[in-house]
Length: 529
Image (cartoon, rainbow, N blue to C red):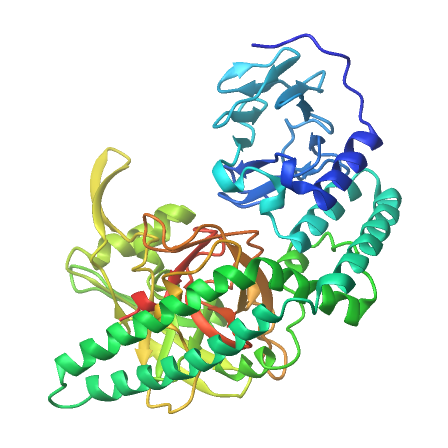
């Protein structure tokens, strides 16, 4: 129940002071996560925000840390606040005109929050889930240092931009001193990294041998199984080595990189354009060289044959980008299944036209969509959805109401079957790591290429966008996918390649499942078969 406390006032010290504590001494500080349950201009369903300061505001005011756009007319400029109260947090009603609800109950003034609570702003307004991380993830210290600095900049910089810059510089100086002292001190880490490089080379040779044996007319199953067991054992050694080195070494690498390139740990404020947050400049070096194998997938036309034999063709006036794809070194052009067969996933985007295509496809008719894939090298592949390999084992039948009629449709699922590939005769492409893709450690950084909102297709050459996310939990989730957090991908990244830097070089670890509709999910490359 609500408790009477002192009157709420927005306080610089409550924001900056707690932010300092989180960045520099996070091991003893708790934080919470706000999960968005509605699509909006600034957030997608399932998107999470880690809150590391003691005081935030929610509303349409651009200074609010949780900022909703002007289309939410029933959300006030400063609608509600969440502040730390001892060892818990409380929700405070700020608006004089629009209500706030907690688990369906109207908040008259303030209410203490508990894990799993649902916050709603006004009648029919946006909803937020309140989550308190548990176990090893419950303190700010479990968040990587570079991420904490980023969160400090975002959350303190909203209402106190100038003060946040000054505070960020102070934090930068403290961390520089720390980095200078520790960066080259651990010789054991160097030894483990050298060992991992050697093991990775052995793994690559084993994988090549396995593929060669499997492609023969009479593959030696016993030899293949023995090699796979040997590869799994080697992959296990790499994982154990990474557990010992990644937590510290990754932070130090990022810190040193920022110091070498910018001289500061404080990043420039992000643009207000949504696409600016979802796509960064592609990195120089090895990863940038992979872009010739990354493709924009464009829809050219769709041919529909109805159950009664009638047909029609829907031509796209201008080829429309529907997602991304990538070429592996075994000749497979990979994308997400919902990119090439969206009518099986229509409930997510709520489009009646796709519902109609679903009914046609499962009731004796046919739907054939024609695509072109193009990369920065100028290479093109043309194909249609009947040419691709997909996995329908997770599809389910569901009943839906359409007027007075009850219709049965076939639904695809955003699990590890959300992939599709086209066999090609190409001899070169991106390397991938089946073993590692199913055993990623929480906190590992993943790097994603794609074409957000179709941007990059009209450039010459075609130029993919770039962004990052982090592994949210060790191993795979209940959908047999890699769950990620801090996901800044957007429409157009769907089906794009997800890379991991493994011992100094990059490998494909997965397929981006749904940058807009199944955000935070990556299909492990080991599932694509």
